[in-house]
Amino acid sequence: MFTRLFLLATLVLTLVAPVPATAQQTARRSFIRDAEVENTIRAYATPLFQAAGLDPDAVRIHLLVDPTLNAFVAGGQNMFFHTGLLIRSERPSQLIGVIAHETGHISGGHLIRIQDAVGNAATEAVMGMLLGAALGAASGRGDLGSAVMMGSQEIATRNLMAFSRTQEGSADQAALSFLDTTRQSAKGFLEFFEILGDQELLVSTRQDPYVRTHPLTRDRVANVREHVASSPYSNNPDSPEFIEMHKRMRAKLFAFLESPVRTLQRYKENDNSLDSRYARAIAAYRKPDMDTALPLIDGLIAERPKDPYFWELKGQMLFENGRGIEALEPYRQAVSLLPDNALLRIGLAQVEVEQEDPSLLEDAKAQLNKALQSEPENHSAWRLLGITYNRLGEEGMAAYAMAEQTLLEGRASDAAYHAGKAERLLPHTGSIWLRIQDIKERAAQAQKQQPRR
Image (cartoon, rainbow, N blue to C red):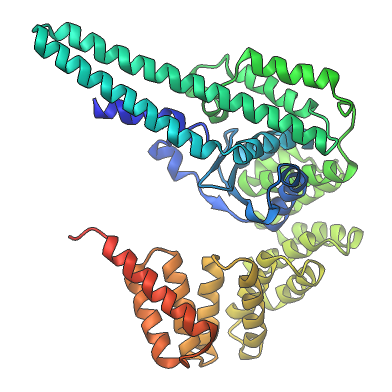
């Protein structure tokens, strides 16, 4: 019985959380970071977040490596995108429609409401089971008690499904409002619904998770279609800038996530478009065939010398092929062109640290401290900063950086150890000393909550 109730709760939670994965699925899913892809999504999303009254900087974008078509919100203002959705969306407006819908879930407070609905449904089912058990015991008829129990659970399930349909419809209406406010067409959103309609014809095991987590109804499709017919912005095209950004994002993700053979089959040598050359450059470096990759990326840089992402890719190509010293200048160019991006600074610092050249360490320290101002929860940056401080002989600061890293990684005992060491070695004044006390307190609380063996 309790298993059934748990599944009942899980059914609704999947509306704004990923479908439970099989072991095989989990093995092939991981999170990735990419400055260009994240900034492309933010360029699409920021006007929608502002239209919804959200702080764009407070909404966190997460990229999940998964070939299926899905997006969801979870854990507050966190928006997740499967790479399959990004690659398979044919136009910016299709993805923008999905972002608008997920923004509707956040602005509508659906995560909190769903938790309340799950609690209510569970209560209904429990009360029904208790009533059924009592009735069966009093009448001596187990079949009657079982019927009451099953009936209560079916009612609870129907109520939850009705609730989910209501929330999806509400998110749709919010999405359409945000699109109108930003003067964008909802045609892409309707096209995405048509893709989902095709998915519904498949057996459930072959459906993309978006279909299962965002139940599609005729009313939802009809409402979007009616909006497209009446909105004064329906014929507004995607901007040329967004179209290029979208093509580049798709090409980049495909080239990094698929085999070089598949990439070269899709982006053929006789296709001289910018996104095709971009994809082929990535495929060549992954083979690795640097004799082909470098001329391709150099050609793109010659064409777009102020593009930070082309410079970043050149630096990555060189660094990952054992040419770290040559990689420094491309990474420096990328950072100079996009100085507010933490990922580019972390990339440059990693190259500097791994050259084992003492003259590069002070700049690496500066790059990492700057990056951590905007991304204080970046594990990799704290790890690299700890290494940098250690090589500079700043043992106390190295211990502090390692305390931050291990706390973020949930290693409470290690965090307590490093924080204690930093406390002994650093002055007992200032913001870092106060932060060390906070780390010690959080680590102690985490250790108390850990189960005893």
